[in-house]
Each structure stands twice: as C-alpha cells, then as structure tokens.
Length: 293
Image 1: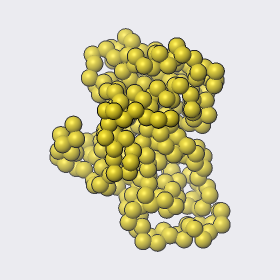
Image 2: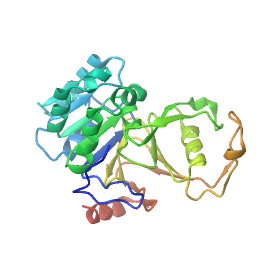
Image 3: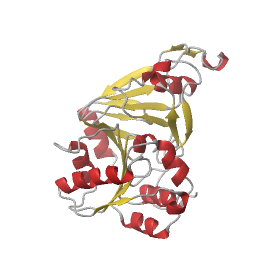
Image 4: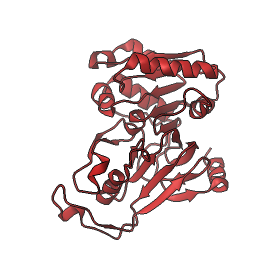
C-alpha cells in the first residue's frame, strides 16, 4: 500500500512521521476501578465524547470481550463506543466497516491472538484505512496484549518464555506496520518473556525490543517518542551497542551468547526516544514533547 505523505515528514529510518498517536498496552489493564490507561487513551483524543471503534478480531470470545470494553468506556462517560466484530476476510472487506473507521477518533484493538489480526485483516481495506488515518490524521490507535504486539511492521507470534535464550525459539511475521524497527511483547513481566526480546535484538541489533508489563503501556508520539503509562514496568532492550554474538553460527535450539545488550526500565512519566536511543527522565521527556509538537 502507498501511504499518503502530503502531511508527513520522514524519519531518518525512512518511516513516515505519523500525525496520529499510538498506544501499546501490555494487557490486563484495569477496567473496573481506576481505569487509568483507558482514561489516558480518551484524554489523548482531545475530544469530550470521542467515537471509539473496538476491533475484537484477536479475541476468541469477541462478544464478551467487546462488552467488557463497552462497559469500561461507559464508566468513563463515553457514549459513542461500539464494537467491530471482524471475524473473516469477507468481513474485512465490508465497506460499511471501513466507513465507520474513517469517522472514528479512537481505534482500539483488543487482546487475543495477534495472528488473527494479521491473517484476517492483513492487506484489507480495514488495515489500509487504519494506516491512512494514523499517518495523516489526528487520531489515536491503541491496542492491548495481542493488539499491541501486532502494531509494528514485524511481530512476535510464538515462542515459549521457558525455552531460554536459544536460536529459533521465537516465531515472527509481518505486523500491521504502524511502527518500524521495534518488537513489542506483552504480559512481559508476569510471563517472564525476557529471552524472547533478547533473541530478537541479538539477531538484529537495529531493532528495539519493548516489553510491556500488565496494566502498563507506552504512548508513542511522532513514531519514536515513548512515554510510559500505567502502574507497572516497561523494559527496553537496545542492541545497537552489541559487541559480540554467536547467533549466526548456531543451529536452531542452541544457546545464544551475546555481549553488551543495553537494558532500560521505564515507569510512569519516563520515556525513551527510539531514534536517538536516548533515555528520557521526566524533565527530559517534557522537553522532548514540547520540541516535537
């Protein structure tokens, strides 16, 4: 797909600089009490009662999942939230669904199985419209769990965390394509998924590995400025300074040696610039956001 670039500039990595805001959440965000992350997503839209389209494609129980989010957004005072239960490739080609997304202020992907998102929506008018909106209009695209993992141009879809740091244990494929040179992993702390991102940055040090804890997420502005939100931990793996790894000489299943992977942790109010590879303490993050708005 050709992305319209009339209102965009390009990053140093040749990725269009988006007009929209991306929010990636690590899963299991609070939907009953403080609803902190969902409130933040609403706030980012800068509209009192935004139109929200909830895409339940990843979920194995789309009706129940959708209802939970409708109830949560209703508690916040949103009256224009509705679900898009896109279950098949035929659904993904329905013009009425694309028309609804065109009018949305917020598009929210639920959790489940990220392969459902890419296999059902990939190459469809739905994805084309989401990408067009994100790169050319003021909007918020958000995803939780599988919905977050699917956002980059490359995504993890398999590989058990207990298999340690061994070559070939992580399965990857193309994602939605809203952010480049980044891999997002969800439920990161609770499920101990450190080895998955370590393998990825060992094999491609140009990528950033982003591990999101539960009830935690990041706001991604301008395609590269990250701000941590929520109540948990965000872990960043930066491989650009790697001095040595043996991964290219290994057979699948063999353990990986790697020297000098840089690891950061973010909590609410802290940030990271994926272009400059700069850690942003709260005052630095505020300054960076002022300079980039």
